[in-house]
Image (tube, rainbow, N blue to C red):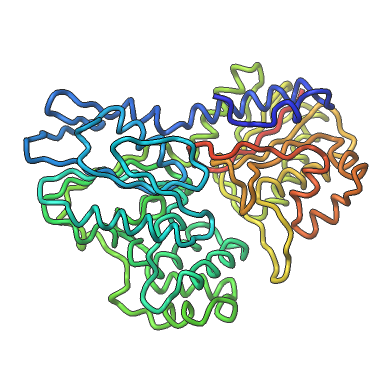
Length: 455
């Protein structure tokens, strides 16, 4: 499958054409490697009346019913694989995917929601999921395929907080510099479903199987599939996030009052609250899976891999500059790795945007353009920043692929790339340089991928 749609534009008749082709081939192989549908097919089996999932088996009696629910950017391939394996054994199901999903399902109802900011379609999908769960009886099996993106796709705000207020809160949280754990500590406490609350009403004896894909460093279940597992965050964590990023005066009044009040009835579920459910939790793909795949793909392409870290956080622009500093060291004296090499990084970097900025961009695009600023005129290297789900920030682009002449090309097209970088309007510069990466939904969602090839 070809994920990156504008490969010809990114490769043909461009400086560093071979390196560009190789880095795109590596990225394509990585996206194949992190396909959650393939993993699902490996661990889920149906043998007559026995359902086997990884190392656990479930006996299917005539009364056993199988429900499939889910929400997230990596949910569709898992749901499709479950349909192919279980077929008519699925009694009912509903999953919510990001708008633009091209596939179809036969036994599971497919809903689309908005991401990264929720809208009415996200409410509709959430209502469908909760309606189905009300039918579950003791002894039934619920398979939950919830992955990154569910925070905006599966939405049910607490009383007193409107969907518009929650959407406004999401926009501010996503641009204040907070990491995903800090962001979700707030979002969970504005929801009737997150933090394990989606499953609290399941009857005793229900078998719940979580098949999830991680986009959170450390793979903490309560941050990657939080509606269907116990939670560890509290209202106090949400309050600390508002303190740290000075958000008390920026968020909608209804949200501020709800977080400040910290009503215990809206606290998230703990392990004891969900002990009546027989739960099996499986992480199909860890957050660093893209880095693992990149190491293998780089070797196959003839490049020595160097993994810097799979836990990068902080400012995207700083990381872009650091990659180029490492490139200069490698080009100068062959340390810390000999050429040809592939330098690899993963994690979830962020962009801190001050109130009032209206530029278009995302953390991977900002990483790439920042690298391009420091590698002007350099030959023999290319840098790629890629969001593995295909959507970098609130844009339709997946990232950026740059070389030593990106700034020159952008400038020749009446663009001021350094101004774009300063104003976080990086999409404009990458488009002008014809270095923007377009993929659409990829069907997966692990950590971001940063690659640098040096020949």
